[in-house]
Image (cartoon, rainbow, N blue to C red):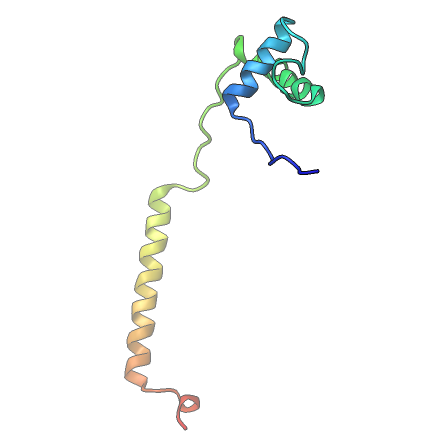
Length: 100
């Protein structure tokens, strides 16, 4: 007995099956060749989110955690510090532990 390959239904197919189940046009598994429990799960998703369709307020964009100017100043300070330290290290020469 061979197994058929796993099928991944498209979102359009899921919507079509869920709407047919909501309308009660057809029995759940008859035309779609899908297990009835799967169609029941697909049907529940639009019902859960239906309240958002009617009058839900769009979430306001969250303010950034830190101001962009502050972050740029921090980057500039770190860059300056890195440059100073690399210059000092160059003047000091190689580390004694690096010699063999």
